[in-house]
Length: 297
Image (cartoon, rainbow, N blue to C red):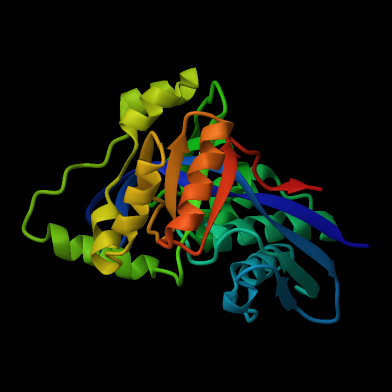
């Protein structure tokens, strides 16, 4: 017997970042939108905990106890007094270290898969609590759709989405370290008054109405300047997508994946083709949002 769970990537349509807290984290107002690029995690009985991975960028995925999927299995097993003997296979399609929460998605998927495999009967509140222990983006990977995350991003309020949004994601060569991007944010904002992070009412209204034009006007990422400082070449990718007709362009989360909002499916394909031909990125992927969270296949 095995259980397979499909889980989406995310884009931050608004990432407002506050000043560094004493614990080193930052308060956020993080508007997550799940997009239709997916990893699948399969949990099967085994004699010991083991992680395998296939797909693009699989060589970059850690297969030891640091993998969030493995950590999720251990956390659930500890809560229920069982041994985390499971083979977790990750079919990887979300870009690795790309600011799209691929690792977090795998953690949420493994949690759901192990819960089903072991019949632990965990409530969603219990699963969300474990997710929050694993990382700031993991709870959203569990619920999907759209949500406002505050605190470190793990305290979620679902957001209604009134339509379908079309995206193109340009995958960069290599990753960007999230801690390094936050450190660069701190360096760039040193000596300034960093405002309290808030979610834009105009952006939330655009999501509710399914208004692509209004969403394009309201997108924003406070980490973008830091990501561009560490990887200046991303500016060329953003410019190429904008020139190809994107309504808006931004770095996804801490990067280095860049996200382009398109008017419709045809425009998204045109933008993706232009980006692929531009030489400014490794690949370009088309996806729609919102997408459901971690779901047993």
